[in-house]
Image (cartoon, rainbow, N blue to C red):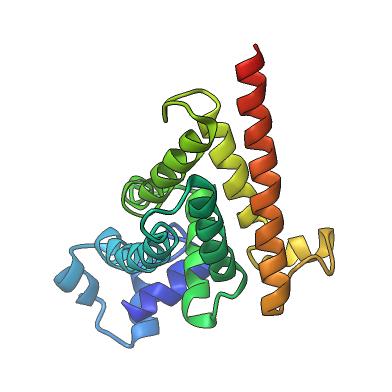
Length: 202
C-alpha cells in the first residue's frame, strides 16, 4: 500500500505497473493479486486512505458552532479549509498529486472519491449558500456560487505553475492566511448579496 501510495501519486494509475509496485515494495510479483485481486484493488485501497484524509478536513470545515448564522458558517468553512490547502505537509501532499491525476485521467475510483469525499462538503456549502440567498438548495444561483467559493480556495493549492503566474501571491504566515480567508469570505458574501438583492428587485 505504501509503495502504491508513492507511485500512484507520482505517476497516476495508468502509468504504474504491477511490476513497478512489487519492485518498489520489494515484494513477490504475485503479492498484488494475492492481497488485492489486481492493480485496481490496490489502487482502491490507496484511494480509501485519500478519502479518509479528505473527509477529516471536510468534517472540520463543516462543523461550525451550534447556532452559527449562515455568514458565520461560511467564515468557519473557509477558515478551516483554506489553511489545510495552503499548508499541506509532505504526509498529505500525495493526496493533491493523486487528485490531479484523477482530474486529468479519471479512473473508476473517481466516482467513489466524488461521492464519499467531495460531495458531502459541497452539499453542506450549498446549504450555507442557499441560506444566504434565502432560496432552495436547488436554485440555479447556488451551484455557481459554491463553485466560485471553492475555486477561490483551490487557487491557493501549492502548485509550481501558480507560483510562476502569480509570484508572491501565496500566504505563508498565519496572519496572511487569515487575511486571505477573510478576503474570500467578504468577496463571496458581497457577490451572494448582490445575487440575492438583484433577485428581490426583479
